[in-house]
Picture 1 (spheres, one colour):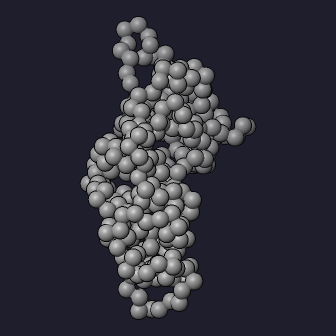
Picture 2: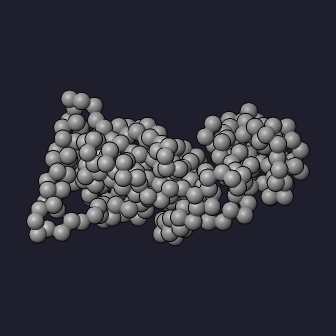
Picture 3: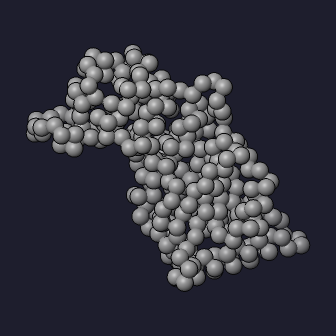
Amino acid sequence: MTRDNELGDFLRARRDLVSPVDAGLPWHTSRRVPGLRREEVALLAGVSTDYYTRLEQGRERHPSEQVLEAVARALRLDGDATGYLFRLAQPAPRTAVTDPARTVSPELTRLMNHFLDLPACVVSPALDILAANPAGQQLYSGFDRMDNLLRMVFLDPAARRFYRDWDHAAQGVVGNLRALSAPFPNDPRVAQVVGEVSLHSPAFAALWARYEVRPRTSEDKHLWHPLVGGMRLHYEAFTVTSAPGQQLFVYSAEPGTPSADALVLLRSLAGDTLAEHSAPGVESRTAR
């Protein structure tokens, strides 16, 4: 993953996603580009075509906030995508935190293991699963490895059974990676994960090239577990303020529903597994 002119890559990808009709421009059947032309973005943003072209080509490195806001409006960017645009055009000063926390604190680990009976895990900006409580480990037990959500979604065959709407899950995890990794543009782990998954998954490479920024903070998910069956779970993401870049993911179910009963069974299975691994003579194992 190169960042030599990521601002230009972002602008090109995003104008491809805007149709002239959506932008209020006339439509011609002879158009050769899927979205807006450079001159059309320049017109909508109120800048010269030459200036916008230099912006895309990386020859203009210091656009003003007014220009960025105008370009964001022209490309119909939402708040998250606009924030991403500003990060690319105006990198954080060197005094800002540039490296995410790599380890989970003992206090957060204790909270997950002893006070959260719901499936929970802590993830990094690269979507590495840094820690998970027993219920969280059991939730993902159908995967070959529980290590990185991006790799699991795109490279593990179990994902297409686990996520009942795999396409939606795939789009979501890519957009979330964009959002979570944006504050850490030089994180080598993000580059490593993106490179690995791009190499083996054309589906991921195509979604990543769209530059969609979609933080997943709250969502209902339809999942399937090999032992408890289908579940409709609500997912919430919480920022771990004491550890830059980390987020706590927690899954819950509506009380009194079959999904709530499935979660009870899931916790029971997690407890049985934990007791088995803690028994004398049985070696403890980490999450798969």
